[in-house]
Image 1: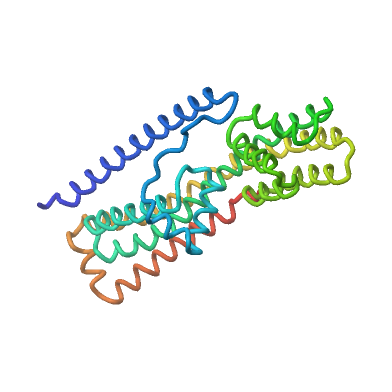
Image 2: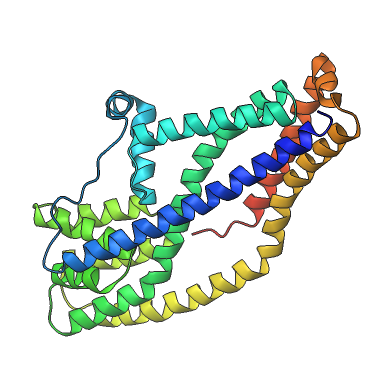
Length: 312
């Protein structure tokens, strides 16, 4: 029984490895399924594509609340195939698992603290997915503007050019432009559809492109020259963003390693004397010290990531 903490850590690490493998296998399967649907729907959307939704009762109730509507809006921007109810249930299950693992390895008080951090982590995960999708879309903007310029120069209307670009580009640009094309097909104005796209994926580059397209649709005339110049500018900004991201990669790794070192110190303390963390959190002063330390680690992580964030 003296090796129970080490055994628990080993089992936890094994479970994490198996979870990563499972998530990777699931993602690969989803990617193959999407590719199959894409090949089957060259002339239109595939029939019966929608998968069976889980936790529908929870989803219906959650959508009636402000929290549920915010989650739905963020999930739509991330491109994840999840409903608000599914997301809420998965997050709740993950928090329970985190609580029991942290309680077993450290102490019950750390389990409660981990749940609070996990609630923040769930929202941070969605924000990170939105940021990742936005950056992926920004990287496709030079190709998008080039396609629009070529189509416009060939005499095609802007709506037709957007539909053509939707077929030529990969995700996430394909899915986002398909949403714009679907909205235009049901009678929505081009300006409203493009403005909604800008709200889903906010960035300076996309705002400039959408403003150019909207002004062109209002005033008329050719926009080939503007799109050509915008393509060159976006290519330069893309290279600059890549260089800046490479320079700041070491600093971002530091932001991750600082909290990891804090957790490692706790493991060392608990390994030196079994029950040390229980004794520490049994006193009010120890709890305050743990909360303050966690807050300082969180503040450091926030400041580093904030200072190294590339504004889009």
